[in-house]
Image (cartoon, rainbow, N blue to C red):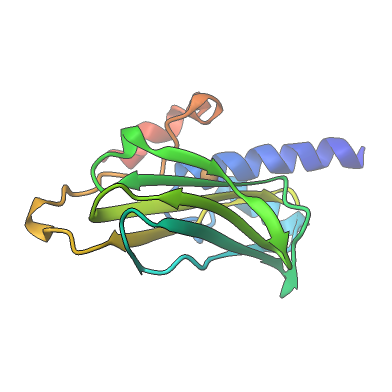
Length: 168
Ligand SMILES: [Cu+2]
């Protein structure tokens, strides 16, 4: 019985997390999940400014009640250049230690980038977003980012009901 309930909580968490840009907002689905589980916090520790053509560590620190979470089901980094969410790159984070998950990437050119740390742990889905400036981009040429917090991928496409609301 317990196992079945946890699966439902995961699905609710995933849908709530990936369809709303602001995950701190409690809608009906996330409310159900949060009653059964203590909040999972994800702190992105990648610097705000990095250099192009260098190995950059994408780092997420996952905690629950101030304790490190070493058993996250998945920490998936999604990185894209501002205005090019359709060309985002996915990198799987691997546990380093003490709840710190890492992946290494390289930015080929200066620009404004965004990343999500899609984290599924303890039956919840949390996905903080962070802006990363690479080098010294010409800000007059940076495309505005139209990301609205939705994941464009396979299973996340299930929830079409939300789409209309979000676009207005
Ligand atoms: Cu997500």
